[in-house]
Amino acid sequence: MAQGGFDRRRVHGPNESFQPIFDDDYEERGALYKGWQLGQTRRKRRAEDIRPIFLNTGFIKQANGSAYIETERTKIACAVYGPRQSKSSAYHEAGRLSVEVKFAPFSSLVRRAPIRDAEDRSVANLVQQAIAPSVRLDLLPKSVIDIFITVIECDGIESCVAAATVATSTSLAKAGIEMFGLVVSCAGAVVGDDVWLDPTEEETQLASGMLLCACMPALGTTTSVRQTGRVFPAKAFQSLQLCQERCVEIHHIVAQALHEDENESNS
Amino acid sequence: MPSDSLLPGQPVPLPRGPTLKLGSGIYTRNGETRASLFGTPQHQGSSVTISRIKPHPPAPNSIVLGSITRLSPQQAVVSITVVDGVPLPPGEDFTGVIRVQDIRATEKDKVKVGDCFRGGDVIKGLVISLGDARSYYITTARNDLGVIFATSEAGGTMEAVSWQEMRCRKTGKVEKRKCAKPEGL
Image (cartoon, rainbow over all chains, first blue to last red; front, top):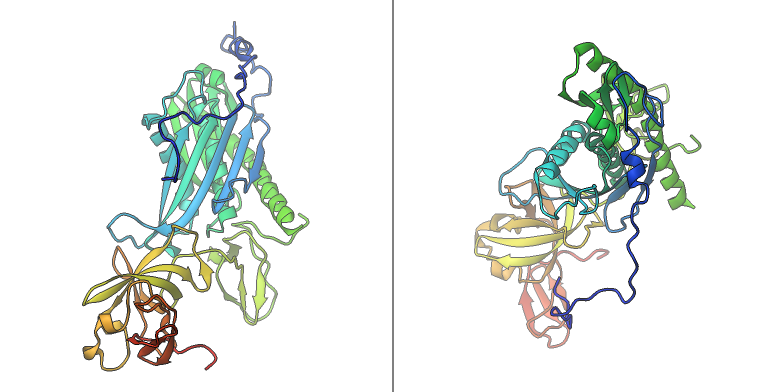
């Protein structure tokens, strides 16, 4: 961005400055599971409850499609550009998805340096795997769809991946890219004999294993399943079932967000 | 839902009777017809489509507009900026190539690229193939295809005087181009 007459030697801060707002319930969050023992119930919500979802589309004007998702402490922005001409020199009959995930420096309790690390890429891979089967890439030869995900705040990495997947699919629908169906995703944590859906960071630490499921409820198909940690097969199937039931509800939220956006642009 | 819009993956309600031709935005899977775009299905004659006016990459038989960026004795390189009447977002242009044998339909062996195009000319072309990894192949071998806008050496706008000549409005000098037949002539 070469701008004429721009003084590069000085700091161009805003004229006004504000005191940073500090997280006041940080200690309260850390103390939520103090003295919790295996076998006790989940605190603050029921095991099969997910956090309320706020989903909004089209707030990044220059992108072809964009979405913002917020589930309490998970806040993610997603922008879709393209289809663009592929920069790589090899010929690809089908289009490709390039997913880039960036964590804001203030997205977690420990500051994240603004460089690409292993976590960015693993999240990007998981989102790419969940989304790729839903997009009709055979219609877009030689093209690439750029997906940029910014994690503004992250509370539980699995829930963060699930929310990012929902936001990405919504953005793609908004961008008018042909796909087989909308992908929604839900995470479940196996804690003792229970399955806690949409776990937070603290709940993730109590879990013995995690299950992440992405599916297309409109077609009744699953696009991606990822299991980590120690989970018995019966528990894995139970979590999968619970996640899929929850995904139908999330699908309604996505549908509502898209319809709202349509009504807004018509009026 | 109050609106008639379909979500991707939602079954498309089809009227009974003769089978309709499926256009863009619709696919069939396991015998079920479903939408692949978010929008309202429209019936046009015997086909049903969900259309979105969105920029899309060139495909064979697309009509494209673009400007000449580079010339060589074998080919002219085009930066495609409009595909099927839809402008692409700035900075997201595709590169195309007009090979010397695709410039005009007759006397192909006598064509010289320099006598047909100059850098900066705006051309109208037809995509003939997806080409290689870097570029799409474009042809101008049709009367209505070729240069539609060009400036002379003096910098004036030129107008077509014949199918292979253009005259500068400022100086009256004639330069060689592969002209597109102006519309409505």
